[in-house]
Image 1 (tube, helix red, strand yellow):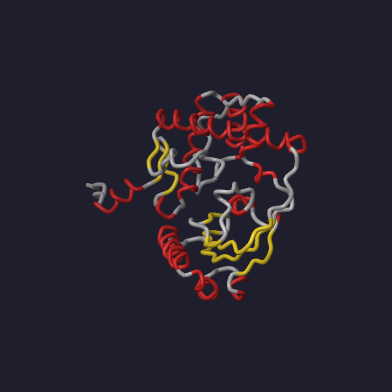
Image 2 (cartoon, rainbow, N blue to C red):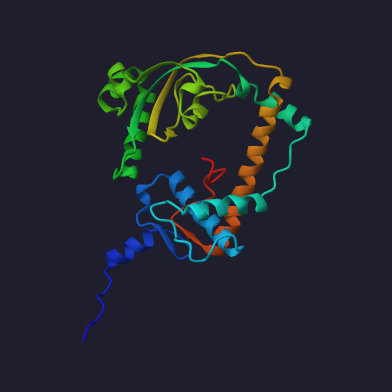
Length: 269
């Protein structure tokens, strides 16, 4: 007589920690992922289920594997979003208010002199442990900025480590978009000189960044950037609607291992 092996307590604990959407396990150990990665995996899985529910995707579509959805699912999600989320065009008054409140966002020719320490996220790395190391170093160099160059030389995973992390003068187009968002177009209250107060997340990993100098650039008149301002407001409205949509889908299907309320938009981080 054959009997099924008994589940161990460690097996149960492993299953409890898994990142899940509905019945699908997206990742067995979500603590190996960044918060943004967990949100993105969960949000994509929820949108895939929504496309299935509305008949845009066959029920036998394969579930996500290692965070990758099928090409058919990606197309179905795009079509579902077009139907489900309608973003109105902002009027001129709203655009003018936004431009007046965020003039630095549309500056042209802005430059920063910066250096960084990169903690690279590579396959198999313990992301939680890496983040803790990066946070500890961030605290240390904020307390003693003079130690930044030596810390970069001994710690950074970037070739700039040999120059103490020096990146030279940068324009926004010199950087990955997610890196540039943290350095450029900042309102006066956010335009830090010195070590930035939080880690910068990019496709390359986690960065401790020091801005050593800024050149403000030229601030064009509203009429010159009106369409860019309107697009910014459309993106904000879409991000808000997407967050609300994913919250509804999460309540319907269930999500474990990811906090969709932790960011303004689960997919646009």
